[in-house]
Figure (cartoon, rainbow, N blue to C red):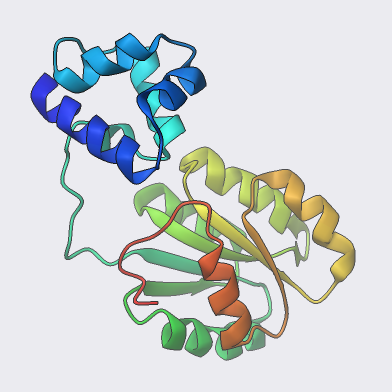
Length: 197
């Protein structure tokens, strides 16, 4: 197990463009600790493994060489209480992201239930949905899976400041256009394989 961890750690650190010293500084450990981990002589404890995953922006399972399913398409959801917005936006999302499974919801509660049983890679959320705030929905989705990318969609610029306070990684005005969508996808906090972008 330590050999696989060592090789994976070395590769992920290099992909991030970090030296052993830079990673050590982020983790508040000696550079020699990182060198020992990468040589397979030692394996960090569970707390450090979690911190390493955070520093390298990967899931803990990936640190141990767990293969990512190649044939599984990423789940993308769009949540808006206006059906006409769903009808207009879903084809745009499907056109720009042909490699994703895209599902629309008019009820935030249905989106939460979906996220509880399906890994959502990217969520497009309306900010104002009747009695439910898209800001609150964002927080719920991130509680379920912290690496979900969230992009807010709204017709009101006034919400932009509050939207950044939720852990979202993007903000776009309605109606969504393919050009705006591509710009947002280029800025995702957690890159998603298989979107087909």
